[in-house]
Every structure is written in C-alpha cells, then in structure tokens.
Length: 132
Image (cartoon, rainbow, N blue to C red; front, side, top):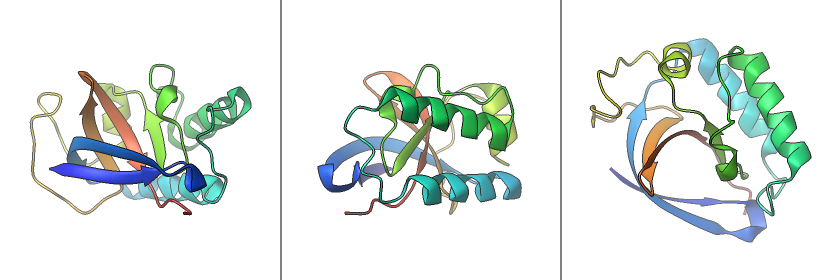
C-alpha cells in the first residue's frame, strides 16, 4: 500500500513510500509504544543528532535484543519514524508474520510495524504519531 506519513515534529517532513504492514509480537508492541512515547514531542529530525542516535540504538537493543540495531538505517530516525535494520533476526524478534522474501506479503494487519522500500533499500521502521 502507499503510505504518506509526516515526521520530525514541527519540521513537518513528508514521507511517501510503499509498505507492507506486519503484526508485532505482544512484547514488541509494548517496546514500540515505549519508543514512540519517549520521542513524541521532541521534534527529532533536525539531524539526527549523534546523541539521539546513540540513545535510540541503546533503547532498541535493550527492548528487543542485541541483534536488533539501526546501524544501517539510522538516517531515517525522526519523531514519528523509528528505523530498525531489516534482518531475519529482527523480523523474528518483532513480528508474528513469516516472510519468505523481503517483502512478499502485501496483506494489511493492524500494527505499528512496516517494511518499505525507499530508493531501492528495504527498511523496517516503527511508525508513530508526530506531534505537529
């Protein structure tokens, strides 16, 4: 499906992408909600700032496990969009959906977890509310 999502608080960045929605595991959904609550209202997106990236990376490792990182996707980090490197281990920790390919499943299931392709690179972001 086509998604348009505003990010970065009052910076009002407009993101448009094609996505496949995945259902998160219960524990993962709780972690995603904690991430969204932490960054809501921060206007994160004027950078991102190195300290914010370090804090975010530490929080996703703490919430989801050491093999869930944002080393290759941190450039997307803004209020309202929280990237995770797309790996099979990350998918196994975060979602109940099984994917035979990246991505191969276009059905929509209510969740916070999406896969999308931006400029030919597959990404795995958590989408959240934007304060503006």
